[in-house]
Amino acid sequence: MLPRRLLGIVSAVIAVSACSQVESSLAPPSAPNLAKGSIGRPVVLVNPVSNGNGTATTIQEGIDMVASGGRVMVLPGTYAESLVIDKGVTLEAIGGASGRVVIEPPGRPTAAVEITASAPVTIHDITIRFGGAFGILGEGAVDVTVEHDSVVAVDPPLGVGFLIALRNNDASITGARARLYARGNALDGSITGDRLPPFPQSFGIGAEGDVDAVVAENVIRRVGGACIFFHPLLDLRGEMNVDILNNDIDECYPLGRAASILIGHSAPVPAVKPPVTGPGIVNVVGNTIRNSTGSCLPATGISYEWFTGRIERNSIEGVVQGCATAGNRNRPAAIWVGSRPPVNMPPVYPTVRFNDIVGNAQAGLRIGPNENAAINATCNWWGSDSGPSGIGTGTGDAVVVEPGAVAPIIVPFAHAPIARTARASC
Image (tube, rainbow, N blue to C red):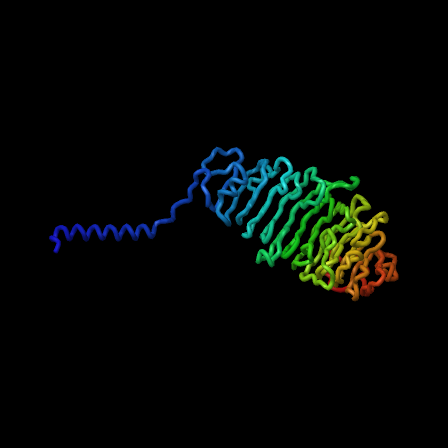
């Protein structure tokens, strides 16, 4: 048994220890390490003229430092680097009143910004100027938001490239679907209408495979392929659910005489033979499509040869010129539905309604020879109160049915422009 004096000392020590444990449990968590080069921070500031104190001097350094799910906030300046984003992160410009954030990698890297993370990645208010094949490239089952950015191709190389693209996602392999949300961006492929082939096929926005996407309110100009292109994998597998909404599209120069908006297979012609199915819904709604330079290259405004969905409330103004020529997948028309030999795809059945189809040479709506049932093509405005020419009795853009196809239903038709109205009938 301890003497009374020692027992008191022991009791005091126990009391102090218990108090310390309580205080420790109530103390705030330790602050993150702000030393330059530390990792796992929720927010990282990128300043190209910083001298340490926890601030990154390059964007890639900021991405490497930030925790997954964190924010990399970038001050104005030109950053001569290409990026690899391998974690969920938000990359955004700040201090916009004092200038833009410009990513301009030297040379011709495959992609200016490559995304490999499966966690959500957001790129906001950034300018990307690139000389390689891809501006923003997502690989596999990525989740990418590109909003209010500017993506500009600078002297792109020959061959196929994209300003914004998702590729190589097969859900049977990755176990997940890819996601793309692209809204309010300005895209410029730098291909002018007076250029003669061969020139780069720098597509605007596109994706392949198992993808869910919204492409909305983008301004797309001067691309050497389709402005918007969504397609299955080469063997025609892949489910797509896509809304293409309210985009402003002009100066699309597809060398394959394809279309400004192309919903179909990629080249080369798929080796898979019918019967095959194209699961997914792709809606093309509210877009404005022009050919302001009068180029002969744009053969079609919208080419729809795969999936199903709605083609509605689009304004297709003088896209097709009289000098436009047929390609191996479609013939000139403001809207083409179906496919033609040697492609031999299964028929598709989109609804084609409430569109303004005006000033297009050769055909306003053309139905491919593989279409074996009548699609709903009512309530379109053909530039004439008396309806379309061709199948119809009017003098507007013709409705042309290729040999072997079933004619669409075109009556009733609109007697005035309808695409920009809220009318649900004609």
